Structure formats: C-alpha cells, structure tokens
Length: 424
Ligand SMILES: [Mn+2]
View 1 (cartoon, protein in one colour):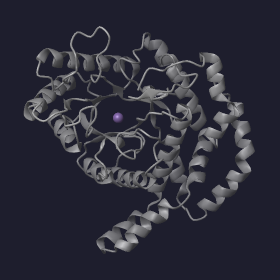
View 2: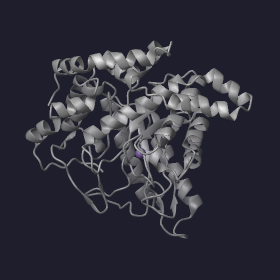
View 3: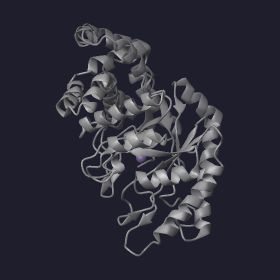
View 4: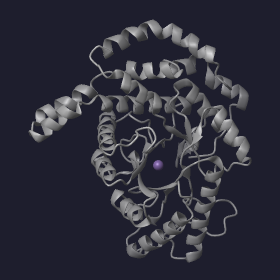
C-alpha cells in the first residue's frame, strides 16, 4: 500500500498550530537552528530488511499480521516508513534472505520509494538448505580450508548482488568462536579469519567499504573470534584502507563505555558504521533509545565531535543502520520510534556548546562539563525534529498517522493475517 501526499498534508494541517507554538518557543534560544534543521533533514537511517517482521527468541515467535513475504513487500514497507518520516531512505539487505531475482526491477522499485541500498549483509552463521559444508564449528575461522572457502565465496557472491543494486559496502558479522575452553586455538582462529577476510577484501570494488562487526558473545559463549572493538580494529587495520569497524550498540559487555570506543575509532579513521538498537542485559535488540537514551545522546555527542574534528559529512561518511528485533511491537511502529530516537539524540548532540565544553575540560571544571551536556539532554528537541520532518514533506507525527490510517489493517487485508517475514 502507498501513502498519499494529501493524507500527509491533511494530517499536518491538523497538528500544525500546536506544532508552531512549541517550535517557536524552542527556537527562541537557538540562534543556529536553521543549520541544525538542514542536518536533520539530510540524515538518513537505513532500515534492515530482516526487521520488518516480528522477531522471536529461541523460545518462540508470535507473528503479527501483514508481514512482508518477499523483497518487493519489504521495500514497500520501508517506502511506507520513509513516506511517513523522510528519514528512512535506505535499505540494508541480507543475503540469502533477500536475494533479488530481477536487479533492474528491484532497483526501480526502490527508487520509486526514494530508497537507496545501504550495506549488504552476509550470513555464515546459519546453514542454508542444500549447503555443502556446515558452519557448526565456525565459518571463516574453521579448521577446514574448504569450509573457509565456502564462507569466502558466499561473501563474494553478496558483493556481486550489492554491485548490481548500487550498494557500496559489505557488513560481515561472524558468529565464529567457541563455547568451551580448549575448543579453539585462538591464534589459528584469528589467522584463518584474517586470511578469509583478506580474500573477501580482495574482491571488494574500489569504491566499496568492508565493515567488520564485532560481538562479545552469543551464539558462542566462551570466546568470539571478532569479540570486541580491539579485535575488529586489528582485522580492519591489517586488511587496509577500505576496511572499518562497525559498532552495534547491543554487542558489548555490560556497562561498556561505547561513547569512548566511538571517539577513539573515529580518531583513528576506522569507524565505518553503526547498528542502532538498545538493550538492558545483552544483545536484546530493543527499540533504540528505549532503555538508555542518555547513553545514546553521549554516543552522538562523540560522533558529532569526532566527525567535525575530521571534517566529515554527518549524513554520508558513516553507515547509519538500525539492527533490531520486535517481539511484542508492530515492527513498523517500532522502527518509527527508533528513527525518532536517533534523530532526537543527533539533534541534541548538535546543540552542545563545544567551545564551552572544551573550556570546562581544560579548566577541569567537572561540574560545568556535566551541566553543559545535561542541559542539552534535558531539552525537549522533539519540535525541532518534527519541523525537519515537516520541511522534508513527512508527517508531523508518523506513528499517529500510521494508526489513523490503519496501515497495519490495510497490510493485513493485502497480505493476510498469517504471514511470516524472512529474517530474525
Ligand atoms: Mn548488528
């Protein structure tokens, strides 16, 4: 289903008076808000193709209705999100769950919705039907060279799909590791993985990036072969200039200082991209900003500071993606909430008085440094984010409009009540 421009206009007219009042009040003290608004309009967050259906856990999965049954329907869902917020203009595909059958048709469909193809994602953490060799004991780290070659070949295949669609990056997340002490020779596992990644890297087009995603644990519970940012950075540094570390917020050990990790990776020119989500305990894949919004703001504070320090373009120079799972919410509403949370944190980070903060730091004025950050964090910037949406032609309140138009009901009518999307 498509959303009509007139429906958005009508919705915005209903809310405009109240919005104008709140916006005017907020920007009274923000002299530079026009520049910030443009940055918010430009900022796009890629939606993963695997997050459009209901997620599950190893205990079960409670499917919702109207889930997309194929790649075309997934693109339509993201098109819907993008029409509502004009900030979800990219799709991150997963192979083999979303193998395009007709590249030209898929490209045309995406561009019809104003979408581009962000990072491609490979999968060597599952065995696929008919697969010759098993990844039970790892893929790129495997003791058997034939298994490693199969994993390398798969990644090269994913790059080929991406080239046809206009993607410019490959994200490699490996579940490789071990579940018991003694199971693995750590050095051999690292060297095998490095050699495998080098073969993939060699197949990368010149204008592509390779993102090495790390994760502390799960599905392996004793060691993970790309377990933290140090290991990822080691691989990325050895691979070369086109290789970067990818930070997934849920892939850290509890209480890790992610903002510091981000600051140092940016300093080294090795931060490539982001997977946004939130968590309470582990890789919970919850809605971004739902549990630790202050941490999200502090991360964006370092991102803005680090990118500005290097003269980077906020919207284009890093890969911004959501990686989440929705067990109890409508996936599309959840994704709208995540994108909103990301834009709020980004807007707040743009408001930080960096000159004053630097002065406080140099003067060891700890109290003032905290005041500067928390003054911004406690400012309700939602009218600023809404104004950016309004100017971009999106809905002032995307979730409200999604519900008013009963879009889930329409999708169920179109696709049925018992559909299951491929993905996690
Ligand atoms: Mn991820």
